Image 1 (cartoon, rainbow, N blue to C red):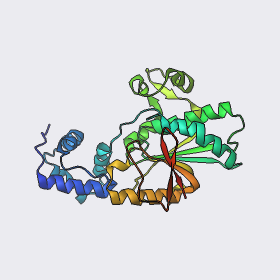
Image 2: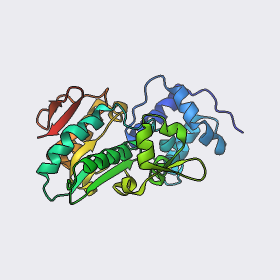
Image 3: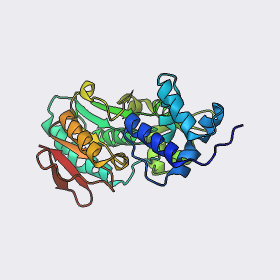
Length: 279
């Protein structure tokens, strides 16, 4: 098996440019170890020992599948059930009661952007299920959760909806595990059909057009904008605004903030938690 050598400055710079052009991720100045650890296996499989070789091969043969494999490996897929909890409490206690009245006979539509292995959209679906159990007749026209991600492998795992117990222990209560999952023969746990059926998983690069997605009442775009440049963040937030219905809501990550866009969004303090309403 090939051994990957130390990454030279020129090779690292070329790879940084490729990654930003491909998916918007802006690597920091000293992330060589991260790159090596995530790409070591791919490079070894292709007999490559330098990052420069890998970048040149991707650029020379962009449709070979290597580009997708590298982007897949480099995108961060760390996620939890009910991550940061406040967004899901706000959804359940504030937004769903409001939208169940204002939507009338319209379908509720929610977008989970950068959904990774499915924990966020399935958490949203569980909250919807719990709300409907307490409020019979709410959302009579149904609910649709569109969940997107750039990484093919995590999207496939999300669609499968089966998880090991270790993954389920990260943020999921025993009560919700019992209520919304069934144990499979191999010791894994599968999301029950009513929770799964609400979610439509689709491949999407946030750098590309969102026009095919339609309009949403709520968008979750959490813990992904931190990897983009300021200019790209603004572009993505502007285009997300175009997918939101007037008065629709945007959730960002706990460490992310929306500033300098007063024409498009207004901040809503939920105490605890902050969301943004589309103007």
